[in-house]
Length: 140
Image 1 (tube, rainbow, N blue to C red):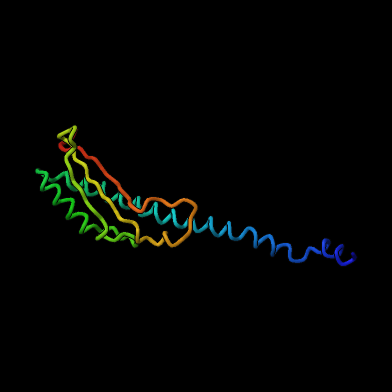
Image 2: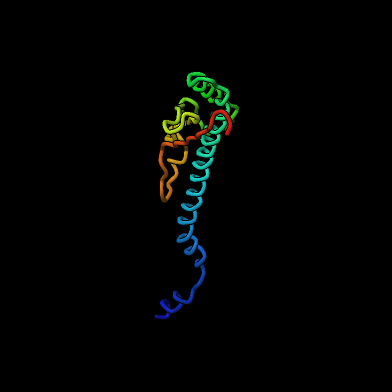
């Protein structure tokens, strides 16, 4: 009995046990934050590229010329993003069916090669990032 009383009163090693309980949850939370940070950085870069490509295409007179300007912008873009691969990016330029004075630049990026899928996270976002920008031609 004496050994049992001494065992319950002994507090050495309590911090190690508490750390063993809390550390996995903390590490999982940090890895989730890193994963979402990478994903949101890529999503923002794709949105910015779509907006810049649409602004560049305003100079085009015909739909074909606008499409060529967008393709040229995307291939020669100076965005230095470590996680974006240009060969996984699909570009679509289309006139707005409801308004002839507007056109939309859509970018679709296959994000399946991002390193975040190797990290375990609570909720996993979509592996395809889709962003679009609609712009008006000819001013107001």
